[in-house]
Image: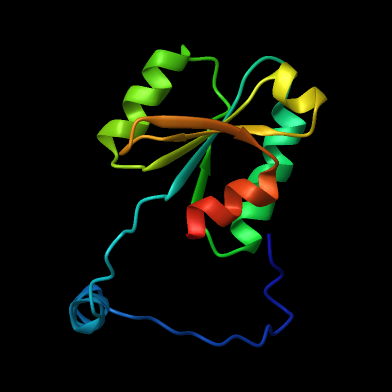
Length: 124
């Protein structure tokens, strides 16, 4: 509630919807690139999965992290349907030896390697 005996300095600015739409129409459409790698923690390995995802991103690898409790089979099906070539699984047995399970969805292969080697294999 303002008082009528005090003056308030104001500045007004408004953009019309037509102007905004015209500006948006001029912008080039950017293609949404899907992730190259999906990181899936299994069991109580979310902290290790977060670290792995951060390291992948630091190497300019587009990465998605699955943190839900969906079944592994459904998560792998999602990766396949989104054309994500690599899946990194981090279970408690892999985590205990500082390794990850790297699945190549295209070649249908799987190896257990340290994360830095997985990055090397992904970047080829």
